[in-house]
Length: 205
Ligand code: GDP
Ligand code: MG
Image (cartoon, rainbow, N blue to C red; front, side):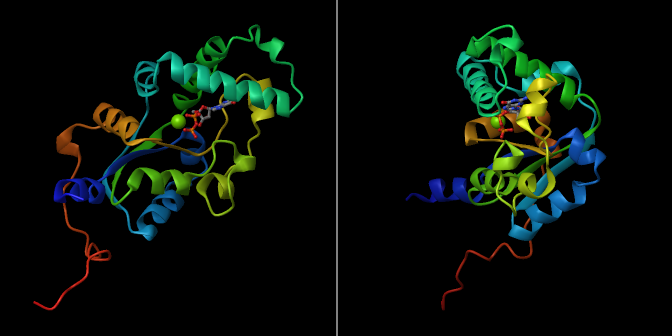
């Protein structure tokens, strides 16, 4: 693999946001500790109160994303014996738009903490630490598995997003969009961590 490709892996960045439920439950320290403990580097961090316009720009708007969320929501309706017709539509895209609206309400309800995390395979590692979207399916040991008890059934019935403590970018592309949207380049720092040699071998010269 070329040096540049390796550099890209070493410096991969992802975006993590502690959602309002995480901030209100004082879980910020817990989340930050887990990221630092695994060896990843926090290179930007800020508490802020998002506007609806900002959250609208944060989440994708394309049909693919909306249909995927709509489909997931429908699967949860079936799994928990809820009648999807109570949403007023069975169309995946329209349901996706509805969940998007619920996310705007949720993520503007209290301050959040946003950060950029850097390190090898940062996107996949942080996703793994966050755990499955649905708390009951998130493994113990993950942030969502350990700290959220919300149910997709309650969330859907009450027409609100599932409260699951954190948001984490799913792909490097999503991370690039989110980091670029939430941070200016001067707010992201370049520094050496003292343990950054963890994946490097000192060879005899
Ligand atoms: P994530 O990347 O794991 O956060 O999951 P998604 O990108 O699929 O969804 C974004 C957010 O929408 C989730 O974190 C939840 O807060 C919410 N959400 C996702 N699926 C559902 C659902 O089926 N029902 C409800 N009520 N909320 C959902
Ligand atoms: Mg997502």
